[in-house]
Length: 246
Length: 339
Image (cartoon, rainbow over all chains, first blue to last red; front, side):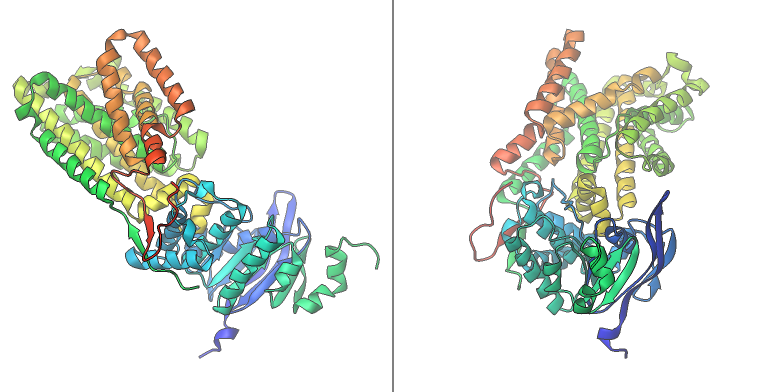
């Protein structure tokens, strides 16, 4: 049997994405192994969120293919990829505002998680406990503040029972204390063996979690490797720290 | 972190009482023609049809977020197919139900086109569909254009028997549709359609098969509106296309759901009762009745956007026929009650 930690979970090859004349991704190869925690950084407009959208199927790539757990999922709708274990959170939280927090998460357990009855209740309750939202279970989601909306995004994704979790700037807009609280939750998930890809602007937050760092610029991956070596890569410094000589 | 022990509460003591009362009322209504005089039987038949219209609109818009202003398409087609089937020699009362099923089947191909449209495009597009259905029905020579025709097959029944049969059909249709919607909303599909209403992309990204769920609700509400239409022609006897394909039917649906409480199961029923009472008391006032309806709808939209029942729910956390989930922590104080 192949070593679990080595198993290739997600494998994207030659991804191109164009919106009319605007080229957002131009030839991205990106793969994630089981148990891996990958951080994705890059300046605004580098194509990070588009990459994530293509990986989950919210956008179809102009060219290239996405394989998940060995199967080609390039043509598969988002909902089906989620049911296979590929979950994402949204940069701007999208709660189901007319439903309670528990109902939000339960819907994910029913559909993405494929659970029914008590098993769905248990999976939803666990997702709420993991994200520290149990005490808010009966609140209507529209009454939540930003940090709780971000937590709800995470709880909902977890309730689908993912094997790979894609986080889109989940720390954005939070205070340092709030972001740090969220990092603790994500570290717990990492210790639990969940593979995570995390797009984030706040690099120091990301570095607490990521064991591999990918830097994007202008629709390409310009560095990929151990966080320390990526952060000291001249190309990364050039792109990420605003360029300029030296 | 380990999940604390929880219990999911779906029926509360109050809601059990409410359900028992609802079943008692239903049992009484089921024998209505044996208890009430003719006038009341006729009025209740009308009320049942209003309840169907309100509940179908509420399922489509209040729960699934598919705002349509063309539901009269299905209402009119239901009436038309009932007349058509009866003219072909089929027994008239079964025809009322078969007509609704035909319209439900037709709404499947229609859904593949219409559900591609979003928001306002869908809403207006449905009105166009209604106008188109109206024109197509007028092509049938049986209908005599706008002159219309009658469900003459009803003349085979004595007036008393006809009144009772129509009542029972309307009651069975209402009870059946209420049960279907209630069971649907309490299950995983109910959670899915509310998620779609609140954010379609987010629903998709947590694994909800969006198109399938929307299609189910679209077809259900088409079938229900068609049943209301076929029952209406059984009470009114005459079928004039202009009356049945009039946007007023959708306007009534909106009024009932809005006043009762959009997106609450109890609200739609309450809204139908309120509308029925307003019509009974003020229906004779002509134009001023319509002006009053419009003004009332406006006042509700501004002052009580969640309708009468939505307001009651917010104030009291009371759920009579609950479709949601309340979390109770076992052995710990109650989780915050906020509605």
